[in-house]
Length: 114
Length: 230
Image (tube, rainbow over all chains, first blue to last red; front, top):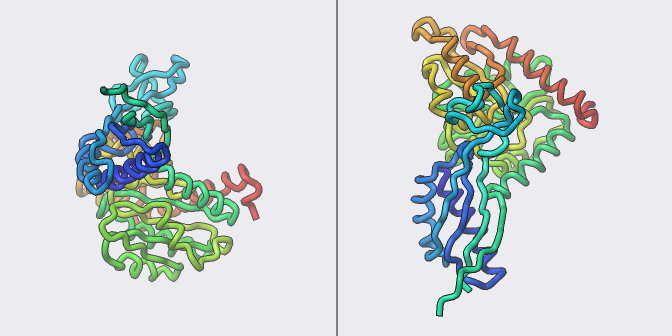
């Protein structure tokens, strides 16, 4: 359960940013890759717990889940995969270890109250 | 009057602090010429027995040391100390993984340039350690034959983050009717191209091949980065 420390890092980042702009935060937008090692539901629960101790209590956490894309050596193009249990091209079944996206664990934006 | 919300772009990695620290550690390890292996697995997969055997076998030829993460006890460090290699326990308390800051803190007083290999035994957990870079040269995922062939499918994220897979307790494979082709297939499905080694720390079977693998990986690094070669 490392989601609590992830939630606290998100809050720290948002607090720092909102402090610098002296504005209240309505929402924090986060990207979460399918291979990030963080579970969405666990992160949401951890966030609800963590935000009570901060001045970001009113800020919602908006999670965008990012699917895995691999580079398919046969199609020579970015492709999806059937599931994270099978890193093969969804079009032609060729395995690939070259991951183009899906490891994201990133704060992308804040919605500030104007 | 309600104004439209103001969106400000941030684009910062949540684990930025850990990633930056890990990058600094990696540079430090490379400059000192020490090859660092981070061992990850579930609890009870035989990490400590495997590491004890590794340290004991390597010690006559190489300068080796280990950092061992555990939630509460120092038992592992005591076991590993039998190998006569320098070993330090990192007690994480309630934290389910090691992070780069814990590694940095526990390197205090060790002269890295006097080491050839440093092993980090992560906390037994196949979920949380996957997100934390420790600055290692090689991430090793261990799974024992007693855990079943489908372990990689249950924990694809950590297997995907690994550079090599080591299947342990092979002396028990017959007793549990371990399905080798299924295990390989599952590992290859979640991490195409991953090298798979088979070892038994108890009988010593496969340990030479593992040590050979480690030393060749270290050589590859030294050739790729002549600054690290001494």
